[in-house]
Image (cartoon, rainbow, N blue to C red; front, side, top):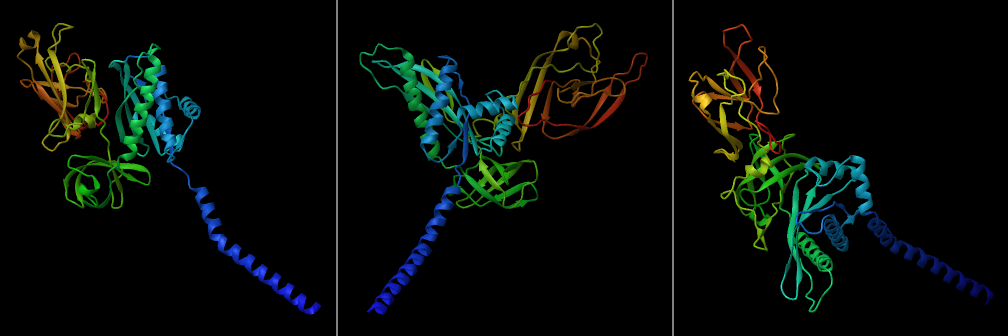
Length: 427
């Protein structure tokens, strides 16, 4: 009997051991899945301080909007939203102050290893209805760190809840409206699908074929940034779209566009205006309604004067031009241009020996052998317009002689540079 009991207990222990090992073996994949789930990191996102353009409340309103939007992104559970203190410290270390430029976004994003940066404005704060309600409009942009360009965004308006008989301060109503606007903005951003595509092939270095079309959200005129391994390498504009693919023209090639590069649409945020006390949101217009070059060139600050022509002013201080106008636009191929025009003064009209007008630009400052500034373009003396383009050009210009010389020399500039999108110039 004792021997039999020992065998039974031995069998039970043996079966228990096998069962335990089997249980451990079965649970091992679950353990591995748990570990794998723990190492998945959420995309890091920073919300930088908003700007208050409403004229109400100053910096405290902008700060409230920033915190409200950051809180709404945190609630989605899809992002690791950085704390305000960490962002402010990094901005200080980089010597950056919002609002940031494209370069500022890139520097901050790389320093904090971010996926995206969120920025925005308090566009308007108004009061409507009876009982009084606060109405706040926010514009929010999601900036892609690979390019520094907006790829998502929203304009949202929030209202405070009506409070019959309310006699408190207006700030309470405004803060409530801000929270509601932040909720709507983040909800809109989450529901938007960013149009993306892959470059299938390039054609003669001028066009690309994309693997997405109408069903992928692409449309003619859409501008897209091209990314390779997290870095912008170029920019394209979609010209032809079918259901499943599209053709785009290369408008900027920084490092050469190749097959398998990723293209991502640049987001166009609606503009906001307050007219007669009402907030009006204006959707971006199509290319037929405005030149896309205005967006590509950005805020071109044209403050300067056309330089004097070859006909020198015989009495100092006399200016031969007036009413200088500079307009950004596009040429027949939709490439960016700046058209500069001017009128002549009585001083210039009295001097009929005008050979040519010489145009100078603030980014190209150099002198020739005669000590004269080198122009980026010239036009005949009887012409009062000049078209500046993105294409470098050869310029033949007349150079004023040094003192004591009567000969007018003709000089040549081999590489007068063209304009670049996003830069400001003085002419």
